[in-house]
Image (tube, rainbow, N blue to C red; front, top):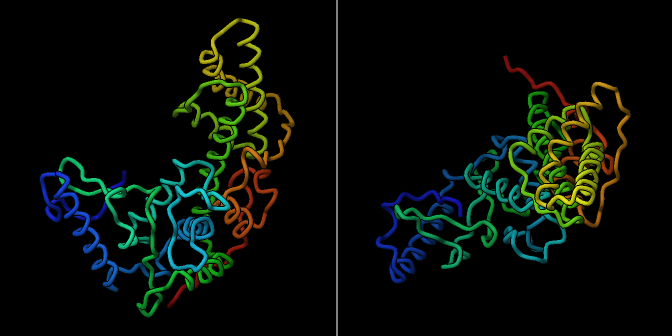
Length: 312
C-alpha cells in the first residue's frame, strides 16, 4: 500500500465497513476535484529527464489501446513489463505518483484499491490501480495521454548537458536490477532459496562500476555454479550454499581487477530475463545502444547532448 495525498481529517473514522464505503465515495470525489483543477497540473517542461524516461516506459508497458488511461500493472495482458522486477516497478510508479505526474483515475477507486491506515489516512494499491497523467502544456492546458505519448517520445531525442547525470544514475539502477534478476534466475534453476539484501546489492553495484551488465552475469553464474559444487561436495544445505554466492562474487570481482581479467560478456536470456519497457526506452531511445545496451559499463556511453542556452 502507498499513501494518498489526503489528510486523515478528510476521511471518516472509525474504519468500519460502512464508513469505509463512505470514505471510498469521498476519496473518489476528492480525486475528481483535484484532477479538475489546472493548478494541480505539472508543466511538461518541468519534469526531469529521469521521470520522462520512466513515464515513457510506463505508457509503453501499460497504456490502454485507446491511450485514455494507464492500466493496472498487475494485469496479465501487458505485452511487456515495466522493469525487471515488480518491486522496482512499484517504486518507479509511486515516484511518478508522489511527484503528482500521474494521478489515480477517480472512476477506478473502489473498495479493493483503497485502504485506511490506523491514523485514518488513506493509501492505494499500485498493482490494481488505473492511472491518468496529470501534465500540462506550456500554456497551462492539460495534455491528454494520447498527445503526451507523442510529446514525450520526441523530447527524449533532444537532451541537455545538465541531464547526463540523470541518465547515468538511472542506468546504474537499471543495471543493478537486471543483475539481481539474473541472480534470482540462476539460483531458482538450482532450487536455491535466496533473498538478496543490501550486501548482495552492494557487491553487484561494485561489479557494475567496472563491468557491463552482461559481464556481471559471468560473476553471478560462476558464483552460483560454485555454490552448486559446494552443496554437492560438502553436503551443505541449499540455503547455506546460496548464502555463499555474494562472497564468491566479491572474491571473483576482486581477483579480476587485481589480475586484469578479460571478462566474458554473457548473452541475455530472452526467455527468463527479457528486456523491459524501461530498458527499451533507455537503451534504444535515449542511448541508441540496443540490443547491446547490457554490453556497456553503466554510464560509460552517454548520448550527444546540447549545451543549455544561457539567456542574457
